Image (cartoon, rainbow, N blue to C red; front, side, top):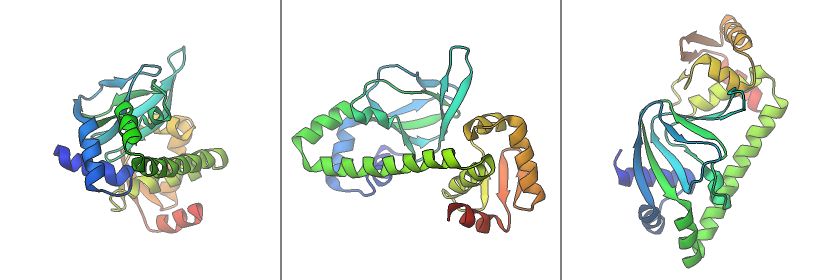
Length: 225
């Protein structure tokens, strides 16, 4: 994707709109970057100053304990941003980030962003609005994890993946073992869940590809209602 289109897509996803002023702002404080599959983008605790916007590819965000056991935080898809905690004036990344595919990213320098805001206070309102939406989204995710069982979490996750293309066919962004970690369950429980949903005629799974069958829409409406 060309740089100008990447910036416009970021503005739509982050601010919810585009404008000449916002475009010039991001154009001035951002760079495009290419990262290879299996390359580490950054490590937990590492100093940083860049909000990352994934133009293409897939990224895994995770944490590791002293024994090396991983806890998957999130799989980042094309058109999503991450490391936004740096906008809270922190200068260290809270998680590890690994490229699952060759990636193209737009990196926005948050330090220069705040300098621009100080020069143009009106931009602060746009940033506050964007961060408020992000906080609401994250709070909703925390609530779902706290009160939903693994079946409900997985159904909502499939529904979220389907929102990008709305084809009724979704592609799991990582091996099933890592999807299980993301859902807070074991690979064995996750395998049993896939079989149960298949037996119920709600999905048809083939490797990482899952087709959402008749009845899944009604199921998600009841789950999200």
